[in-house]
Length: 436
Image 1: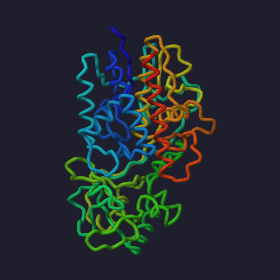
Image 2 (image 1 turned 135 degrees about the horizontal axis):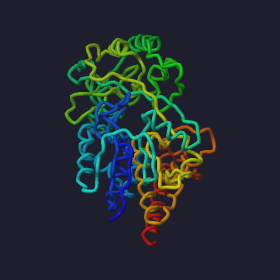
Image 3 (image 1 turned 45 degrees about the vertical axis):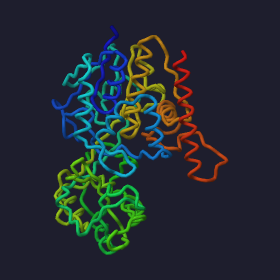
Image 4 (image 1 turned 90 degrees about the vertical axis):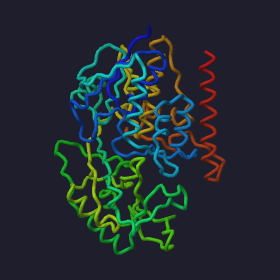
C-alpha cells in the first residue's frame, strides 16, 4: 500500500496534483478551508474554481500558451482534458463553463477510493508528505507559517477580476458577434464605440472612484491583471491599443469600423452571461455600473458580478524551491505549487501541480525526478521559479523565457521552430525516463 499525501488547497494546482498521485496509486487527503473560511475572491466552495476569468488562454500551437498545453498533454495532464470537455466557444482560446468544469474535477477526484476531502483550514505543517497549493489567497495563518519556513519575505501583489453581465441586458442593436479578422466565428460579442463615445467613456474611467486599499498593504500590480482604469491612466490610447483595440473588427451588417471595441466572452455553455474581456477593475461597484454603462450596448446592462481587486500572496521562490517545486530546506517531502509558488496563470498553476506530484511520487519511491528540458515552456518556467537572478516577480508562459533561436527571420517560422524544438526535447526526455 502506497503512502497518503496531504494536499492543502483544492484549486487548480491541488486538484491536478491529487489526480496525478491518485493515478499513481497514492492516497490523497485534500484539505480545503472553503466554505468554513472564505476568501476575498471565491464565490463558491467548489474545487478548481476559476476566479478571475473562464479562459485558459490560447490553444494556437505556436503561442507560448499553446506550446505549454501541448507539453502538458504529453505529460498526462488531467485537468486540461476535463477543461476541453467543458469548453465554451471562444475562438482559439480554451474557455470553460466554470460550474461544469468544477463539477467535472470533483467527480474525477471522487471516483478514487483513496481520495478524502476535509473541509478545514490548515494552520501548521507536519512531517507528512505535503503539497501546499493554497494559492494567492492563502490565509494569513498559513502565509505566516510559510514565511517562517522559507526565511524569505513574502511578496504581495494585487489581482483584479472583471465583471459579468447578463446576456439579455445587452442592447444587441449596438453589438455584433464575430472574431478578430473573421476568426472564431461568433465566439465574441463586440460592442463598438465611435470616437466621441470612447472619449466620454475614457474621461469617466480615469476619474472614477476606486476602492481604497489599506495603508498597511503594499500595492504592486502584476501587468497581466492590470485594472482597466490603471491601464487607461497611462494614456488615452493605451486601452484602445490593448483590450479595446478595433483592429480586425468590422460590423458584418453595415461594414462599419469603430474607434474602439469592447469584447464580451461567453461565461457559460448556455450563453446567458458574458464577461468583459480585459476589464479587470478596482472601481467601486457604483462606479462600475455608472462608467461601464456608458458603453453604448451596455446602457441598460444587468451586472451579475462586479469586478473586485484582491491581494495575492507569492513565495519569493528563487533559492527556496527546486525546479520541481520542492522546498529545499525541508527534511520531509514538502512541495509548494500553484500561484503561491510564483507561477502566474491558470495553466501554469496546473503545470506546477503536475510537476510537484511527479516530484513527490519520485521522492517517495526513492528516485529523483530530472528537470525538464530548458527549451520547453515547462522546463524554462520551472527554472525561472527556482533560479531567477533578477528581482523576482510572478511569471507566466512566454517565449521570452526560452533559449533564443537565431537565424530565422520570419516571425511565424521562428515561433514554429520554438514549438518543434520544445516538443522534440520533451518527447526525448520522456523516453529517457521510460528506459530507466
